[in-house]
Every structure is written in C-alpha cells, then in structure tokens.
Image (cartoon, rainbow, N blue to C red; front, side, top):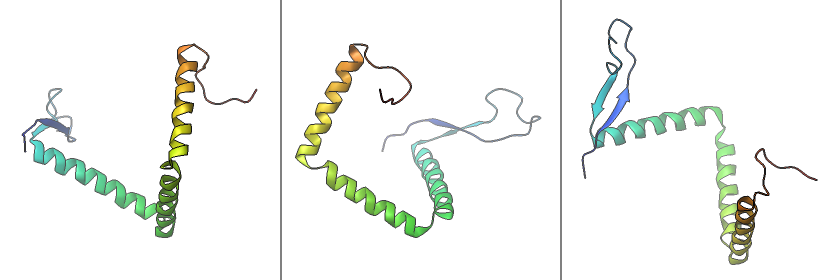
Length: 103
C-alpha cells in the first residue's frame, strides 16, 4: 500500500488556532481510509435511524428491479441513442439551462 498525505480539520478554540493551518493534522494513507470509513459509517447510522428498515429493503428491491431493466440490451441501446441526441442538441446550442419544460 502506498503512503499518501491528507489533511483533516478539527475544531480548536480561537486561542489555540493562532494561524490558518493550526487546526490541521497530517494523516497517512491508512488514517485517510479510516477517517473516510468512519464518516461513511456515521452517515449510514444516521440514515438508518431516520429511514425504517422495511423502506430500505424496498429501496434495495427497487434498485435490483431497475438494474434488471437497464441491463437489457434494447434498453441500453435506447439510452445510448438518447444520450447521443442530447449531446448533439447541446453542441448545437439547442438546450437551455434550467430543467425540463413541455411546449
């Protein structure tokens, strides 16, 4: 595993934070991964506390259903065609920023 450098912030009272970089510590690659993992786990715990488990199971079933739909060859071909049309319209200046509209 290669060693990288990452910085993280931690709060300091104003008296301790005398310079711009005073509230940063240097982490190596394993510490970076551990920090990211702890953030993700905290987010997941918070999400599970808000969303009931049955809803999560329903979401996972729905995600599997969508995956089954979009992995069909004719659906992928249609999505590629639509993406190509969207790119052509974008490069031709025929699109406007701001979302969808029905004319």
